[in-house]
Amino acid sequence: MSTLTEEATVPVTEPIRAVGPVETTTLLRIATAGSVDDGKSTLVGRLLYDSKSVLTDQLDAVERVSRDKGYDVTDLALLTDGLRAEREQGITIDVAYRYFATARRSFVLADCPGHVQYTRNTVTGASTADVVVLLVDARKGLLEQTRRHLAVAALLRVPHVVVAVNKIDLVDWSQDRFAQIAADLRRAAGALGVAEDAVHAVPVSALRGDNVVDPSGNTPWYDGPTLLELLETLPAADSAESGSFRLAVQHVVRPRTDDDLFRDYRGYAGQVAAGVVRPGDAVVVLPSGRRTTVVGIDTADSLAAGRDTLPAAYAPQSVTLRLADDVDVAHGDLLAAADDAPVPTQDVTATLAWLADRPLAARTTVLLKHGTRTVKAQVREIPGRIDLDSLHGDTVGLTATDRLDLNDLGRVVLRLAAPVPVEPYARARRTGAFLLIDPDDGATLAAGMVTAAG
Figure 1 (cartoon, helix red, strand yellow):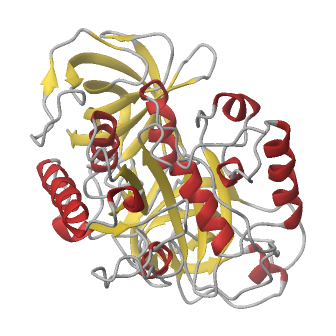
Figure 2: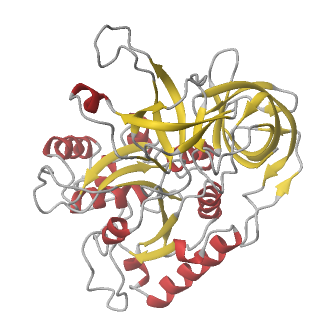
Figure 3: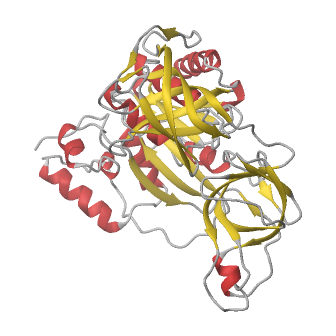
């Protein structure tokens, strides 16, 4: 009977049990990334297994697939390599999402592919992440694809980068090798604009489980947290009151009913994208610029129960706001804090992650979707493609080009058909991001991050 290599397998020596109900106070979004064969899927499988986050039927399915492939051990990497093509090829192609919880926190984990040709999937998985767990093979150190994923995390302004130096057992648990790799990653991250205190390194063996969930006696020189302990304690990107208040209006609520509660009701529903709002707060409606005051905050549950207005709403709650004045507010408008509102503009410079098979050229007409608002836009020029392949600890540079191809990251200048209240992505991830859409078939073409507005 054939066996897997030690890079890809983990022994299963104890039963798996389902996770019971737990009380958690925060949600952390994780994206994993790394080069091919660094053991990323094995690490994720080990994390799920050791944290008791695998259901019995899931383990049964993985064991069955492992037997069908002729392995005499269970391949826990299959817990995230969910697609048939991935299982057959032994690589991660799509973004596999997994949900698990501990007594301290809930997690959404996006396992991103390592191959260069699937960079767009990595962009998708990391776009909403609070933390990127970047896997590095202790024997190989930093590779080109490692730098590419680090650059993607930097461009997307992911708040934390956790470097899991894997296969530390294959370098004889070397403290010097770990320290060297951690220093190399911090230098590369610093050149890309990532703050030093945002980079965390942990020596692990995904195969054996060292420092993944439980501390390892094989690394007495490491006194830091395990990978799971670190993930349980890192602050999420969107704390309750971070940033100024923003809410993109999804729906104008005007019930057609004779019920006394709703006879004169008029509210504006959407998700709080940033900050906090309270009754009495002054807000501005964008792009019109009309100013008013919030007089009530409702949810479907509070209205159904006949409760009074909520005392406050925080990101990312979905609520309905009632305003003091009968101002013109429509789907696609942005409600923002009156004392710190973005200025609507028709001119945007942005970094694009091009996700479409066909290339992008200057003068192309597209649709730009920002929050709940969609407007026509034209690509005025393409200043250059971001050269990730030549990263060697230097700042990202632009290579002159007249087009962007699939998986390219590039700089573009856009002219919008109508003003949109965008903000620099470095200041506000949610209101600084947008999508480009094909006006003919509605396909998503690119994910964009505003670098300058106006």
